[in-house]
Structure formats: structure tokens, C-alpha cells
Image (cartoon, rainbow, N blue to C red; front, side, top):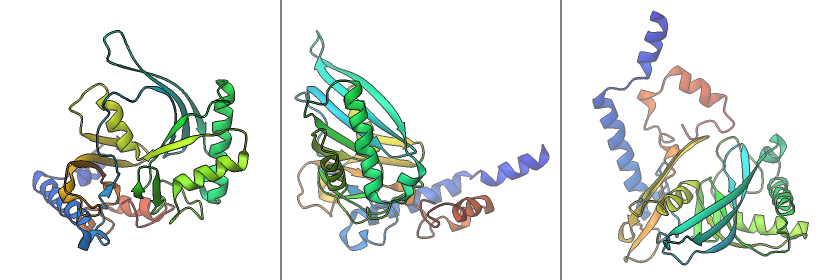
Length: 276
């Protein structure tokens, strides 16, 4: 018991240490937002091109995909108004586990598997004939060029599919759907899971401006003033920023806080030196 206490005590940071970590993280977030320091910042502060929260016109049937951990989820989302004219959201979803070879093979194999799961889901719900608007929750670091175009910067969380990094993820999905040829989809948006969480919570609480995920990985997004988002032109209004704070420490900012256990976990991971 004493040994256990001793080991656990190593993990505890005191208030001063926590404050130091907080200040270093704040510094990396500021560096991520600025053009001249963005490239070397560990916290990338990626613009999402999501500039507003839902305002009421989003009604109808939608298909949603969620890829970000060892499970892949396909979901039918029905958004309508109830008697009090407030939003009513109904969902039907199906989980599919991603085989190891799809996670670490080629991008084509991974996205063909995703398209296969979509096909199965559409069959189950007898909606293969419908061309639905599709939203893709993709929980990896992406540099967006628009709401429906984003370049994968690097895989995290045990994924390593070759031929995806540096490419437009929505394009890879569209290509896989085309290769199958047994259904059509209108891919309208790709967002990070933090962003999806923030937006979905907004339906219930209009003051929600932050999304956070604690799952296979840990990340957060928030609504930022456009004038401080230097990677995107324009000063007016606000944009949701995907912090990608799981990479904090990749530049050595946490070295004196890391323990031998952290080093072992990192060295035996599929992407050593990242997402520390």
C-alpha cells in the first residue's frame, strides 16, 4: 500500500506546477493562432470554417458518420420541430468496429470499409434510394480549406493508413462511395468531434461555446474572435477553432513533468513522440 501511495504521489502536480503547465499551454495556443509561429507551435489551433451555431433552418433527414477511435458509427439524424416549435432531434445509429488492417493498411482500404458500413446501414434502414446530406465527424488533425474540404495533417490514436496524410479527407470518402456505386450521398460538411459535440449541445443550451472530448484522445474547440484567427482572412465575427491540444508537449514543453511510465507508453505507441 505504501509503495502504491508513493507511485501515485509522483503523478500529482501541486498548484504552482499546474499554473506553470497552464501558462505554457496558453503560450502554445497563442503561437498556434499566429501566422508567423503557427508552423512550429505544438497546439495548432486549426480554423474549422464553422462560423455560427445552429439557427433553426436545419430540419430534415441527415446521415452522419463518426470516425475517430476504434469504432466507426453511422447515424440517421432526423431534425424537426416539436409542438412548442423547439428543436427535436431523433437518431438511429449503428456501431462498426474497424479491423486492424483497415486502420494500418492503405487509405483506400480504410475508406472502402467505411463505404461498406454505410451501405450496410442504408440497407438496414431501407433508405438506399435517398440521396441524403451527409455530415462527417472526423476526429484527427485537419487543415480545413472550407467546411467540406480538409487536408489530413497526421494520423493519431493508433491509425496509420498510408496515402491519407496530405490529402483531402472528403475527397477520399467521395471516391470510396463512387467505387462502390450502390448509393449516392451529398457530403456537405466535415467537422472534428469536438466541434460536433459543441454544436449538438447548442441545441439544448444556447450558451454553449466550448466542446471537449475525453475518449480515445483528448481535445477541445471553442468559438474565437475572427480577428485573432490569423490563418483565415477577415476580422468580422467569430469562428470555431479546433485546438488539437492533445499535441501539447510534442515540442518538449512537458519534459520535467513526464514520468518513466509516460516514456514507456510513448515508446511502445504506434506514433512515438506525438500526442504526449
